[in-house]
Every structure is written in structure tokens, then in C-alpha cells.
Image (cartoon, rainbow, N blue to C red):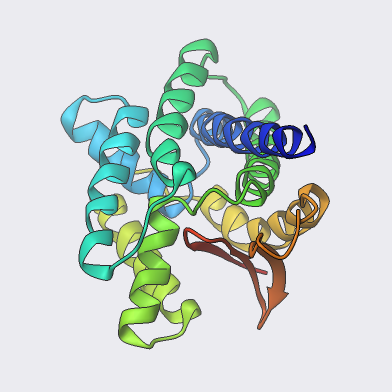
Length: 226
């Protein structure tokens, strides 16, 4: 019974976290003050194709997941779920949330979106069902190239941001706010939501190491800057 209860808690963390992650991204879209690098790319593609930003996120996530094959990354339940749940949740939230007018509403939306994103990150990573496709790409390149996580992450996100900006994705103060705040906030919620280990067979941990927040799992790991 204890094992079933723990599994249920992990699954709750996973799917609540992924759903909230999509909702948090939608809040940042509605704030219209700038998005995180990957959503800048998603929004840019969406504007050129007419496909919803959530479905673009699903498509990009699936394409990134294909890059795991040559990097010899192993996806987990959380990896595959991430591809679909985040994008669908994002579109659902956007359908329910009208575009606000005025900074008096948009600024609180941005703050709420970044904070909710950190909560969501803490939940889905502590479930230990594998990293999202984009985090797995980062750690896979880190292992294959020998370059530091910080360098690989920066190179990926600068590239994604530049392409998204060129396509018309939203870059602004919200992009900067997200970049400087998500690491410390996510680290706080990773510690807050950490689930107790069940025993020696559970080799998943969430620790702070080398200026980064690291969630190691049997399926892979996700790393955020502090």
C-alpha cells in the first residue's frame, strides 16, 4: 500500500506539474511582455503557420525528442507526457483567458506566470519520471561534447531565442525576468516538493551542485541554473 501511495503521489506531481507548466506559459503569452526562449520560438512558428502555439510546442517537443536517438538518451514517462500535456494545457488556458489591456493587469499576469512556472517545475521534476525533451537534449549534448551544462544550455537557448525573435516571437522584459528569476524560484520549489526516497533502489535525487539545480533520475536528468 505504501508503494502504491508513493506512486500515486509521483504521478500527481508529474501531471499536475505539466498541466500547470502549460498554464503558466499561457499566462506569460497573455501578459505580452516577453516569453522564455523556447516559447519565443513556439510563438514565432505559430505566427507563420497559423497553428496554435500549444500545438507548435507539441510538435517542437516531438522533433527535439527525435534528437535523443543519436545522443543515446532514454525517455521516461515524464518525457513523453511533457511533449503532449504542456502544449495542450497551454492551448486550453489560452482559450479560457482573454487578452487583457493595460499594464496594471499584464504585469501581475507575468509575475503569476513565472511563479507558477517555478511551482510546476518543482512538481514535475520531483516526480522523477524523466526530464522534458528540451532538458534531455541539453544533458545529452553535455555528455557527448564534454562541454559544461552552462555553456550547452546557453548555446541552445540563445539559438532558440534568436530564431524565435527572427520569426516574430515575443521578446521583452518578461524574457529577462524569466531568465533571472526562474532558477532561484525553481530551486526553492524543488526542495519544497521533494518526495522522500523509498530506499536504495530509488537512485533519484534533487540536489544543488556547482551553481545549478540538478534533478537526477533513472531515466535522465533536468538541470536548471540557480
